[in-house]
Amino acid sequence: MQQTLTQIDLIKSFTSEGLESKRFDKVAQTNRKDLIDAGRNQAIFNPLIDGISYVGTAIILLLGAYFIMHGQLTVGALVAYITYVAMVQTPIQSFTRLLNQLQQALVSYGRIQTILKEEPTIVDDTDPVAFPTLKTGIDLDKVNFSYDAKDNEKRDEPTLRDISFTIPYGKTTALVGHSGSGKTTITRLIDRFYDLQSGDITFDGVPIKKIKMADLRRHIAIVSQDVFILDGSIKDNILYGRTDATDEEVWQVIEMADLITFVKQMPDQLETQVGERGVKLSGGQKQRLSIARALLKDAPIIILDEATASLDNESEKAIQHALDNLLKSRTSLVIAHRLSTIHNADKIVVMAAGEVVEQGTHDSLMEKNGTYAGLYNAQFE
Image (cartoon, rainbow, N blue to C red; front, side, top):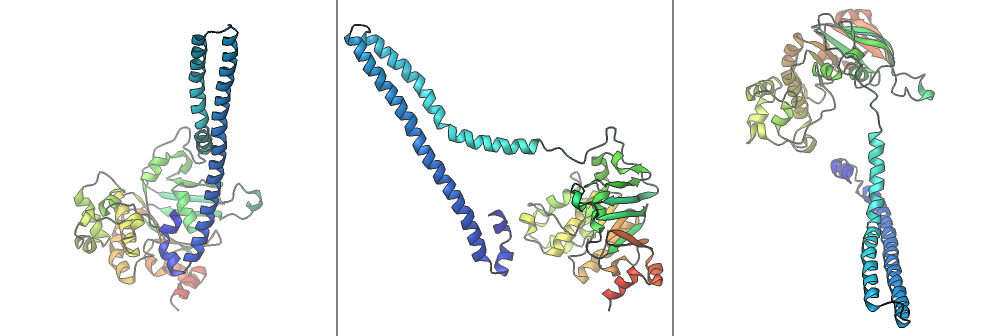
């Protein structure tokens, strides 16, 4: 139901209302059947327990009457005995009515236990160190990684194979290649969302697994092609990068991200609500909002994963200068399909099928007339 409501535009554009209605009806009918079965069982169980209690009381009355007539029991003793039995029966009946809730609680408890038993696969080292002050850069040395590392049948199909290159300190390194070549996977490994299977990633010689994860991620800002927007105000979303920032700093990054005109024309300006997942913003506005958030974080390492993918040419030109100024004083890794945006990169790493096939500057790679030149020429044919 949640997925249907959040994808209503997709459903309408593909006129799949009937299909979704059938899917929902199937789930609803299954739920209806389960509820009827549970109600039927409860309707049988509760009267059965009550009937047993009433039969027990009737037996006591009959036996009591028999003993009274034969002088073996007084009326007062019988009344007291029936009272004691009623006191015992009441909690038993209450307990039986709780059995249905108990069954539901046991199912929920089982699910909670399953979650609690999960152990994180990516953890800090037993003696983690602080993030080093970068002076040389980030080195990837024979990095191998596979998303299916636990699947023995797919271990011979790694996503990355012997990846080795350096991201120099204070320089801009561009990562290019066809979709599926492993570019985004490298950014996830650098931010340690995954652990590599072999090889190493070092920051000024310090292995990534030795660095405290929280400290590592504080020093990296990522602007992804998949923009995550919080259900709140524009200010809330930007402050997510650094909660102690002042309004002056917020306005500064808004201007750098070319959002100043849009924000100032809104009645509530910084307090403008963007809606769930940013439904009130255009694709370009979401992207620029995420760029402003990364600017505010002011991390020494910047990763731009198709950061201008959702911008039109005019908007891209408007913020490219701000991005260039941002990257000049930081160590940056830029993933771009639009090769025109990485002309000035200090270094370009070309990937294909999970491997590094070329490295160099734009001019040197064009002279080489290899994979990069083929990609570049294909975009401008």
